[in-house]
Length: 64
Image (cartoon, rainbow, N blue to C red):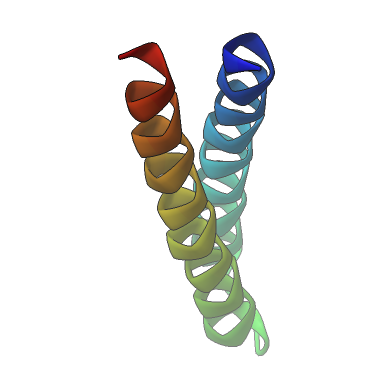
């Protein structure tokens, strides 16, 4: 069970990294929809970070 949570945590961290770069690229491109799209990426990044922290806490609880 703990290995499953660690794999999910790694996936969540990759999602955080992907959305971070997606938001940065969107912000750098600019354009009329740039700020709105970048803001959406950053909201998803915060959601994925929350998920990663919760999974980390679950993995920590299971390791005891």
